[in-house]
Image 1 (tube, rainbow, N blue to C red):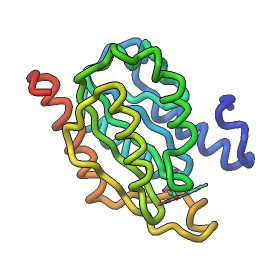
Image 2 (image 1 turned 180 degrees about the horizontal axis):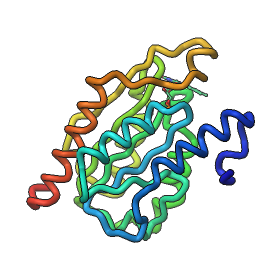
Image 3 (image 1 turned 120 degrees about the vertical axis):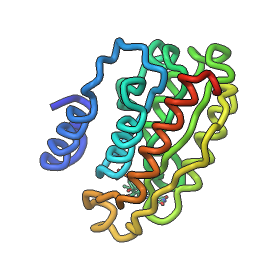
Image 4 (image 1 turned 45 degrees about the vertical axis):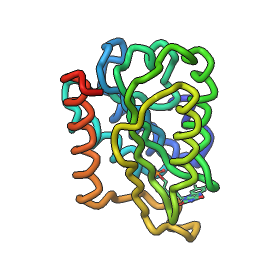
Length: 189
Ligand SMILES: Cc1cc2nc3c(=O)[nH]c(=O)nc-3n(C[C@H](O)[C@H](O)[C@H](O)COP(=O)(O)O)c2cc1C
């Protein structure tokens, strides 16, 4: 079991570990044009990150927020940030990724393309606005409309349950990945 997953209950931690293993099949050393940085606790953002990567095809790579380094992010042509909203803002692991990478990349990724996908229980705009604010410092350019998928999870049971992402949301994520990869490949972004 990886260190990042040791905090929750045993069953929850094991499930998250499997999720991480399943979602990191790509060679992290490959300098892909489209880098999808993701964090997920109950599977919603993870499934959407996977769909973005499928759309992006060979030019896309998935990086779990815990595994993201300034070097890996610097090697990307564009970014899709996929994460849950927690307590009105970005989930802690995703915020930690920005805290860790922000200053090493400041002034080194200006003008690159980005987009966001947020998994939410009832809102999602706080997390999205927080990413927008952070990457304004990096001078990234939003190139696609924000995607927020609301799972109508507001009770503790619903919030802790594994999330099933609706097909139309997965399709939107695949199309986002496809459009971003194509735009980067053609030099439009
Ligand atoms: C501690 C915690 C706080 C949350 N706070 C919010 C919130 O402020 N707004 C919201 O829309 N959803 C909130 N949620 C719900 C999650 O965003 C939702 O369950 C989402 O599906 C989680 O994404 P994931 O399935 O990728 O882990 C919260 C969930 C947790 C565990």
